[in-house]
Length: 341
Image (cartoon, rainbow, N blue to C red; front, side, top):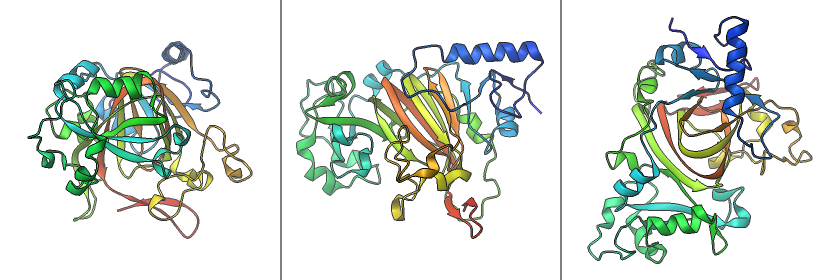
């Protein structure tokens, strides 16, 4: 079995050496979090940081079990590269009223505005091929035609309005879950081997929706908030620049986070996990959560169906890697939660 050097002693069952190694690991953990932390940080279980993690060690010691953070030697994707190579793309930006930011896509004010990242001083060429961007399953040609008034001039304007100033005319913006890396050849953080070599869901039944290679998405914004939710795939997320706070809850504790019903069953009905209304959501009191502030070069593994609340600490950009089979979350008759194909 391949081994890895654990830079934290917060999690039982982690690999590590003697007292000296554990002391060194603890110092590494403290150093990783020594920057001024956001006021809402603290009180949770520290997600372990593993130095020199290998795909073999990841598979043996962490896959499907619990979250872990590793260092990526080269994130590859920078703001400058993104601006250069993504300049001519049309992309959807999620917007909502600033007052609705905590719940974003769950509110009536939420919308997607189509904008273009251009270098030509904000001019939209007449010969733009709108079909080019209908690569997103949620964007139709009719949607594009009905939202032409929402075209924003340039990437620089996006940064000025939604990143540098956080908001524009009472609206908050987030360039979220953008599959740009599927459309253009971009350098990306090197975590693909951790997905491919994991062997997760090799025994998935025939006909199951399964990703042999990861689904990559770009996330760019400032002080953004993603409500508490879970995803149907295994997930690595790499912080390419800036900082981002993550709070995770174990899938087995799903009842404690009050899943919504119907199509939004992967989203918690708790409006603010940082300050839950315990009169409405009493099970949130005392439930264990894990937390970490990702810095540039950190990669966080989130097991499938683990609940996570995400909050940007200033401006930043990250790339997520979904892989494995798409699975549903179901509660068994005995009250136990399980993932099913």
